[in-house]
Image 1 (cartoon, rainbow, N blue to C red):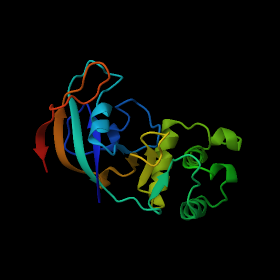
Image 2 (cartoon, rainbow, N blue to C red; image 1 turned 45 degrees about the vertical axis):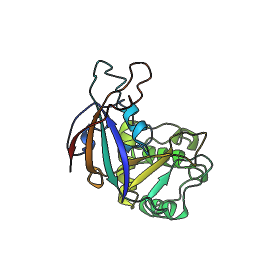
Image 3 (cartoon, one colour; image 1 turned 90 degrees about the horizontal axis):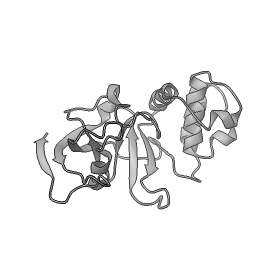
Image 4 (cartoon, rainbow, N blue to C red; image 1 turned 180 degrees about the vertical axis):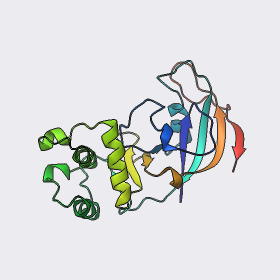
Length: 201
């Protein structure tokens, strides 16, 4: 198991994907519980752009499954989807996925989302955008073939650095500690010395 961090303007004891779109309202990197590799990044994500009037910020220290090649879809640029994931996806779909949809994780995920929602078009159309409903369906599909995590770089210019993850099953995220923190008003960064532990599990 690995230790990661989640920032939120809401206080709770356990994660539930029924609340997954209540932050910024997007499933940009897939439908799941989003966690960051550093405490500071998670604190920054606690700021809710849709509800800036909320001034309560929390950082959750959580335990998630270890990343493996078989249980994680990476969204890094210029990294082809692993043969193992492709084979499992094609077997479940009962068809060959177009080559253009296998070159990277993002077009692969969006293709599956559109395929599951019967949004059939050109491969380019099916790999460029997907609805929230499609993202939810794609995450359920990926989970059904053994994919527990979606990974992307915190800084796309430094893809080997800090990683963020979406965990596709909320029961795989265990809360270890909840802290309340302060963020500065300008850039919403963690205020040094502001961490107050509320609960340990």
